[in-house]
Length: 66
Figure 1: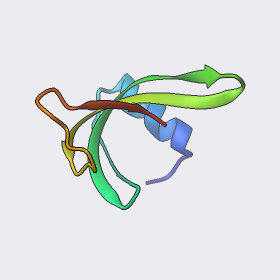
Figure 2: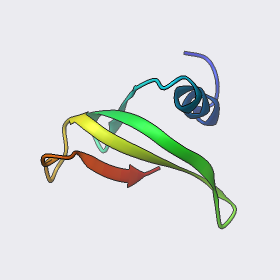
Figure 3: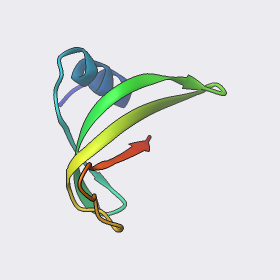
Figure 4: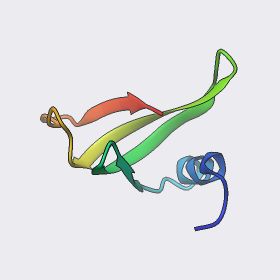
């Protein structure tokens, strides 16, 4: 897949696509919701609905930011 991480996440938000990523050596299936800047740094908010997690997803999944 070509493009910067920012472009990939932006495209996924615009076209309601799922992102599969490895984070902390665990595969995660996530939906990105918000992409912007906080204190000058690019940040994204994702909802993880499947994949692996150290603490488990629970019934409703898990939110985390990039």
